[in-house]
Image 1: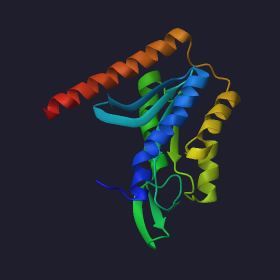
Image 2: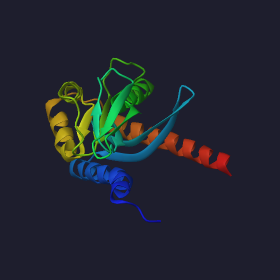
Image 3: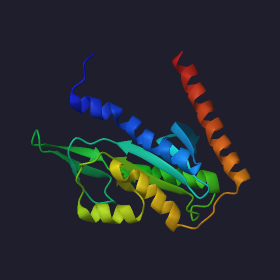
Image 4: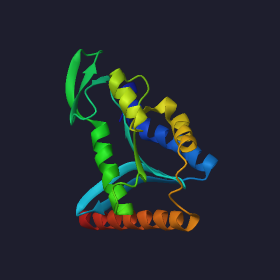
Length: 194
């Protein structure tokens, strides 16, 4: 099957995000988990990547958009404008989805929604234009970043926040717990397909 250049970009985007996260994991001794699926409160929950430092669990959603986005942070739906085809499409607000996903994981891990352990980060492809208010507001709350800025974004966030959420034992237990639960969900899903 032959893919157009645009289809190749969409297909390869998660791997590009993974390469940046892998570099962060190696350079800073973070844990990286990809394609994590859990069941939280009887709901299936998944995210593209989890990057776990000794301070935070970063919950990543990687999204490739063919065009520019318009909407407010609190809107559940945004408009995707494609200048090449002069069309528009209604899409789910990626910030809203990842914020919800991260909140669920945060409560699951801490049992206290006021402890900011899980940080939602939506990674979008370079060149996607967002309204400046969305970019400014979401960037200050760690919610959306272009791929080209991802590495610096995480380094800066780690440097400017002094919370130490994990000691080494807690960190290892958290990583082991998330991995075991994700593996269990994956095995059960595979059994259902057979």
